[in-house]
Length: 444
Image 1 (tube, rainbow, N blue to C red):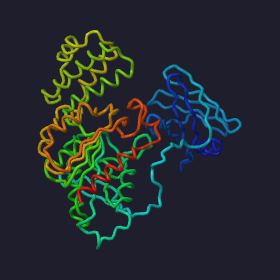
Image 2: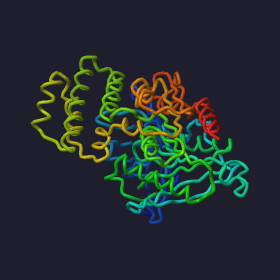
Image 3: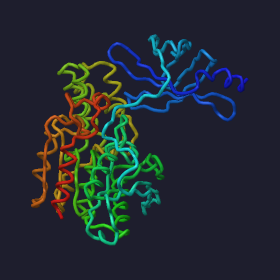
Image 4: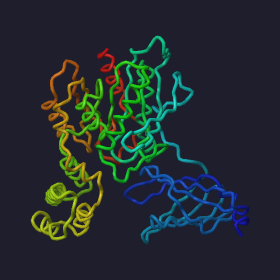
């Protein structure tokens, strides 16, 4: 029976792509059908516009000209018939049916800045160990063009890159954008080395991420700096962090682990304030009324305060009082979402909402380049850059800059909303890349 499935399904084997029109949005969808050694056919689903890849689908039926799959995780089913090189089918979810026709081929995103090998510089696969828990962090060391160890020793600067929140690979890949790969390539072509690595428990790295906090990820980065120091191949060793990584850069600078730091959209205020502002902007974009947005955010702020003061613990009575006092008139759906925040058992989030970067920023004495985009809706420039200006000790090489029209990824954007990230072909503003290189070279 399994062998027959493979034989009769040969016309369907491979990747098939289509555009799902659900009215408000259009989503690229890709199904990957593959023969397995045991004679079965497996299927994976990608939704590139949502940054989702490799969702397992159950193959219910497959033949030379028809297929039916289900995806329990999403409550989705899809069935179609192959005719004239097109699978004409129906995508069903939550009781709604949508026409979805598929053509052979994989989805190819437009990412012109992504470098393609062969590169004009040397790269090396490396790993280093966090001595606190023996987590192994795997990464890529990129040397600058024409690097000569005997001639360059002690003179070539190197940058350790630290990703933002959420587990990410060494390229900080999101929606097929690879910001850290783009930065590493640009640095290498301009005489600067770099080390980027997969987050713990992600990609080729090991370690426990389930209990990890920002402090844990800071420890990983610190051990990356120690590794670069042990190589004795480079001059100044700096940290370039994005988002949470930008905050970690300040933490490392405060402890004098880095010779310089670049904080790209790093937070300068306590995490609960960041979270509330993120929600305020997202809810406004979603069309919630101004009064409901205000009520929701007021309740969210109180929830964060309660969890911070009580070690992350939750209490049903406390939650009901917060809703009653601040958000009694918002929708039941919104209240349920707030309840999920209240009941969330997440060490990373508990640390995030209570950590205030101010104490670390005040202690940074190495050169700092802090930058943000005016359209950043995740770490709002107007909320954070003024605080950095106020708290950061004076240094002749310090630079603080807000880039008009750039979003959280430092792309040129229209609104800065997260939904734009995938639609923008640019991975990172050329001006930002030039400024990073120019600033590092000014330190020499």
